[in-house]
Length: 216
Image: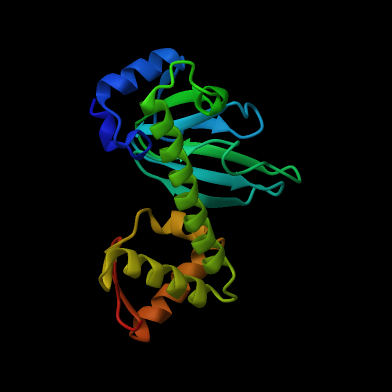
């Protein structure tokens, strides 16, 4: 595998990555669609790198309401030490949305000083901090969406953000409409009714997961 295509291993050769896999005692695991990759609170010592596949960071509250906190693509990094700590009885999980392969590494191995002063170890730490900064930006955008009061405002805010990322008025949703309802934290039926009204009002055109924003 070409590890350099993954953001966390940017500017690190395959040979150097293989050496770190041995040095850090990283473990590789495979998951099927719908399988829980990890549950926050069970083990805060590890960081996971999504080597292949996609996954979702999901929160389940005490009433069983499911909220998608983040979509993880190939190269995505996750771990309790980086972002979330479950509170008030909520369950926070990373769930595979298809066949996935994950490389787990202990947080202590990344942050401790390398005895050999390896340059690729320093690059890994730099890449990690950059990814954390990018994750913070994504989560701030998520807060922006959820801060909107109505379903329509949440959808328009999310669509505008996706449009800006795509650099075009037309873009592909990264997940299903059911997952979109979870992402904006609203009832799917209510969201579908609002989408129908938005189409009738000439705000959007939808073809499956393809969305065209007509009024920005």
